[in-house]
Image 1 (cartoon, rainbow, N blue to C red):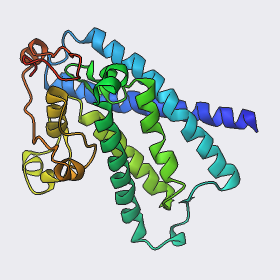
Image 2 (image 1 turned 45 degrees about the vertical axis):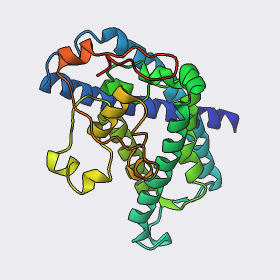
Image 3 (image 1 turned 120 degrees about the vertical axis):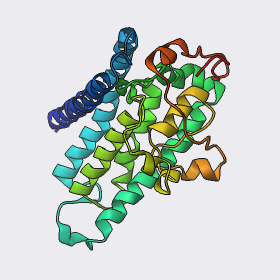
Image 4 (image 1 turned 45 degrees about the horizontal axis):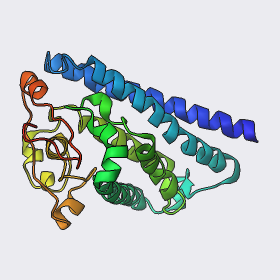
Length: 261
């Protein structure tokens, strides 16, 4: 039994690692092709992001692997594989519920991470990416990685979801995490500045968080930011030289200095 659990945890860690390198690598390459020079001078930072991310992937992979083993061997969780087990309308609803619950957890834990003592000891690792790159999506201190690693494993015990819909959730989670850090806007302007954009988080929204720190804490939706009056609106993207010149030094309370972009 223990060998099977270990192999499942190891296998899930490998899958998460390959997913990270595939998606982050794709968008990093796209960034370099579309904006030559944007990531120039960031080799040391990217190396740091990779080191922290590799550790995070193991932290994400172990609980996921244990639960995958339990689901396959003992029917743990409320993940189902037959479409007829629940009405078809439940499939998209379950995705939205997972995203909203994940976003809620992320907002409040992320906001807590900006409490000065926690910021210094934990969240400063993520904000050390100045400016962040596509490789920064999983660059977390182990304690912060743990807060993110428990969300989906907890939800699969609470909310029924089809296996394919769970893969949709994980795909959205991965793509949004990477694209929100890559320093340019993937989505069309009419969406970002339109009705949908007022409720959804994209790179323009998260860019402002990485420059001002005290706003825009959400992951997918702007619901909690609007409700708690922490929504700072959309940020702007600087040119490569301006981004490098404007890197902020983190001070004691987790706020960037005035010279931050």
